[in-house]
Image (tube, rainbow, N blue to C red; front, side):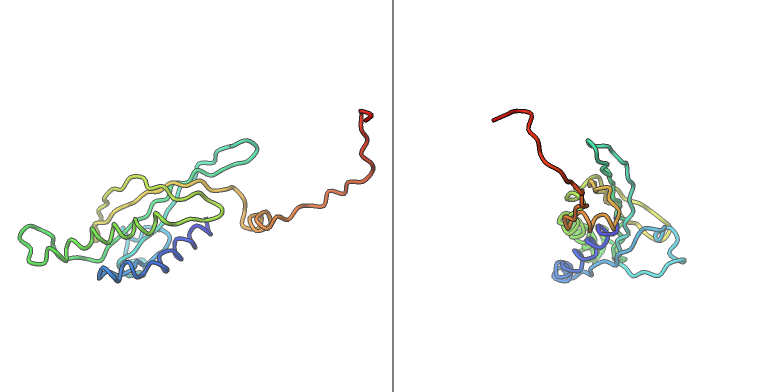
Length: 172
């Protein structure tokens, strides 16, 4: 999970120009810890994306794989009204463009120890301070610990200590 989180941050860093080109800000990224519900307990800037996850381990042959659901709590900047009578409706609608850019970036996150992210459902969420969206993705992750990931990825093999001769049961 640590590598996936690092990959998400790196992908947003590399795609900042998408946001600035649309006149928008790239998001602040962190793990979800209830920030939208209790902003008075946290320091963060808007726009923000907070990542949470749930894991269901599945046995595939001899190995375990983690079926993982990622929930991205996406809070845009506070925008003017987009109502039919708002003189700043165009600016108010920019939050929809921002959500689209967030999804465009998340759609491209890839890594060595998990499958590409697959977009799932998106739903609004409301708190007294924010109206935001939760965008869900799924992926499958290997079940190796951080230390084992590096070891197996590098191809290190334990010495087996085989000795003796190979004997054939059949004469040629």
